[in-house]
Image 1: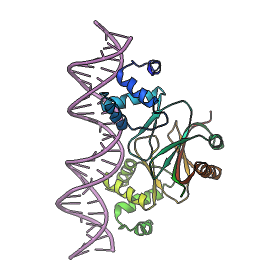
Image 2 (image 1 turned 180 degrees about the vertical axis):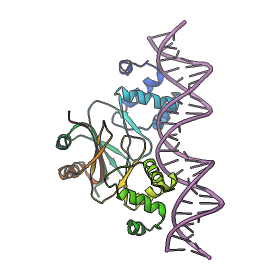
Image 3 (image 1 turned 120 degrees about the horizontal axis):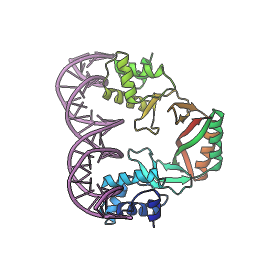
Image 4 (image 1 turned 135 degrees about the vertical axis):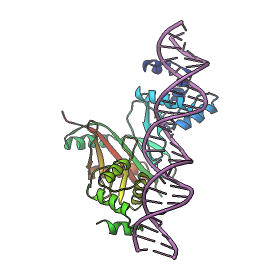
Length: 133
Length: 133
DNA sequence: GTTGCTGCAAACGTTTTGCAGATCG
DNA sequence: CGATCTGCAAAACGTTTGCAGCAAC
């Protein structure tokens, strides 16, 4: 149930919000564009407008419930934010997105920012990869 | 003079192409949106259409003369491609972009891709930072 | 002179917004 | 019932494209 999270975000618990959040929760670790979600909702018999999907996703992003990623495509991708930081690997052949976490890498980034006189706030790393042949 | 590079890219040496490439060469390491460049060209008394700027930048990108970056803003940024790989640090307060290179980081990324059974083709890393207070 | 380029305006795909009616609490 | 939300269609945004005229070689 996603009611609690929505309420905690200061939002009314409405059907579209529940349905979108529930879908993302059931598909943890997968990435969807707004249009993907629109189609999924339609397929599930939920009658939500595309504009609402965008609005809801923005609200969820602000609330920290979902995270937004702009990979190389023109459309942004959204996924459930589980609170566990991870980076992404994109298979350039299949377009498949794999998540990973490497603490050595995280450390190194802190060190690099520091070395330049900065404090690291956030980062975004995407590795473009190909299956070993 | 940027004539040689343009010719080598298989393109005619035209005024718009020369003026854009020259400007980027004189501002190595800085990042500009298409509109930035449009304004700069106007300011320099060069009469180029925005559409031409976009066309020329795309051609230069294909030729490896410039590289394109999508930071957090909606507009893409372009910079002269000097052939030396580097990553970017964005100061979240000022919006300033700093370039850096760290070979340990590069190595580590290769290792991570490998560990997951992939071959690393490319990567994109942006550190969001704040001046140490 | 031919080929390729430019400027303009119109088209494009993605995302946002205004508004009248519907839904939540 | 009031406040907030939704769907729709229209607007906005950055970028691309078609086309008639222009510049490069």
